[in-house]
Length: 223
Image (cartoon, rainbow, N blue to C red; front, side):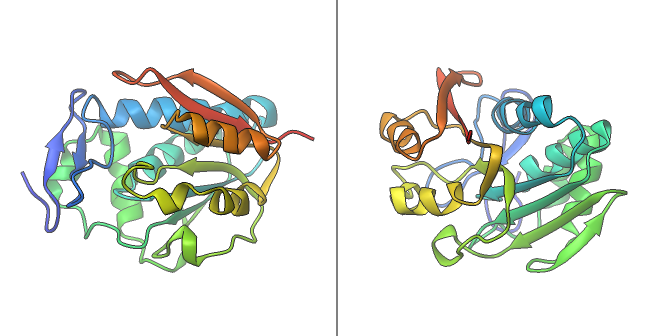
C-alpha cells in the first residue's frame, strides 16, 4: 500500500500511518489512532475541557503530518459542542493522502479526514458548524506565534531526528503564547525536555504513555 509520496503502514490497531524518508513513522506502529487519542486528545484536548467545559478552544499542532490528530480533534469538538480553531504547522507535509489511507480509518474519522484534506494549505477556512482550520506550510523555526493558544500538540519528529525543533528557545516561543490553564502535550518523555518545560514555569507531568511507550509529557501553564 502506498500513497503518492510515502509508504503507508497499517499499525497494530488497524489504523494507517506513513513512513517518512527519514525512517520515522508519523505515528506509532503499535496503533496510530490509539496513540493520537491517548496523547493528544485525552491528555491534551479533553484534559483542557475538564476545566474549561465547552468554552471555545484554539489548538496549535506542531507537525501536522497526515492530519490524523486534527480529524480526531474535530470529531471530539463536534461531540462536545466546542467551537474550535485548529492551526497545523508542517513545512513539508505529505502529498494528498490516497484512498487506501483514508479508507483504513473508522467512518467518522474518515469523514473528518476527507473534509480537512480538501482545505487548501495556507488558507483559513470554516468547516462544520463551529470549526475553523488553517494548515500552514511553515516550520516552527520560521514562524513567531502571536495568536493566544489553549492547547499545543507538539507532534514533531523525535528530538534525535529534528533536534532544532526541541530547543529551549523554540519551545519558549510557543509556551509564551499559551493562555493560562493552557496545555502543552507530546508523546516524548525525555528528561531534558521535561526539565526545559519546568524551567519555563509549567506544571510538568510525566504520564503513562500509549501502548509500547512507558511515558509521555503533559505541561500546564498556571498563574
